[in-house]
Length: 476
Image (cartoon, rainbow, N blue to C red; front, side):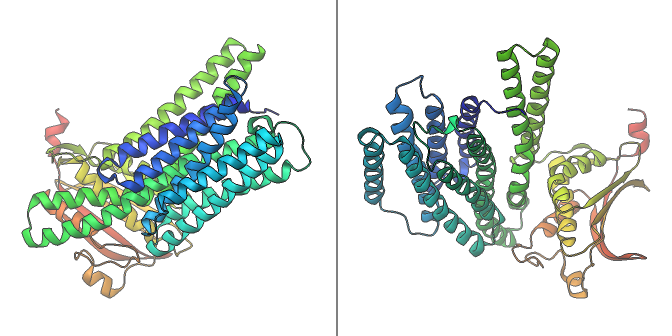
């Protein structure tokens, strides 16, 4: 059975903790406030603490034990302060400073006066676990009040880390000698894997939480302004904000999707290092490990590219767009949600490209909104299936998206597409109205109806857009 080289693993996870706060800071560049600063600062401190701890024996002991422990404690205070600010009850800075001083004195006393390294490790784990459980109580309160799945995901991963730390406390009972986390075999691996999961899920979920809050405020404000001015510029602004908010709802799923290639990269890096160190790997095996690392790096890069291309603001373009390609790209974007809900996606399209003139990002927004509506319509039914048909009919591009849900009520059919009308508990009622507006802007139409089938009911949305004439691209 393969055992992780824990020291190297903690160096890698610590580096990841340094990179993800930087990524969060960049993504939330327009939303930066004190809360974001505390969150990113806490992540950087966690990463720095883990790297210092893993360097025990290489750099002075007082740095790897005392300084790293205090940094880790401060990191948890920073994270707690993030959400205390969200509920308008920040911890006074003098109280935070007092807590740091008391904690530092206790750690110093246990390690350097009593020289009881196991008790010091148990104390650290118990304190951090208590802080994490308190942090979880805050984010779950926020998650319930704001109906935010992203906040709940933050709470779930930190509960996992807190439980692992308490297991470490029990494991250390009766132990003697030093108690450095990367020297503890199975416990070290549990701490490392839970930390890796927490790093990815918590940062992406925090991005989703921040985007969801900001976009909710800005979409409402921009939508009210758009009703008064009714100009194209504000309409496009609302469309962009709606894309960002929709992606915020997907952040927890996307973070899980990104965690898979990152874990694969870590595993193969460990295998390659161990193989090189022991001399048991052939050149072919080493090359195979590095090829897997390259493949998973490219896989993670593609996921990030899809996110960036979907949310970044761009001027409206008018170019030739393949509807089939846009549908495939959006299907990839929502693939994590489809798998999570066990939804079958059936794509049926013509072998030849179906081309239109328009903006690819705006077209992808229509398709994305239709996919999201179909996914949400299947949350309370047993048969979960989405059928997508792309075809060229009478010089028009036809896109049909049909779900196997329970269909729409007569009231919903009468009001659907009206700005601010929604059947979702946490919805704003702007997604379909934006999509209808974009379709009109492209010279087309978005319509919807119920469909009765032999094995159930459902809803179908039809996007009809003027196509580029076949004879033009047949000879291109």
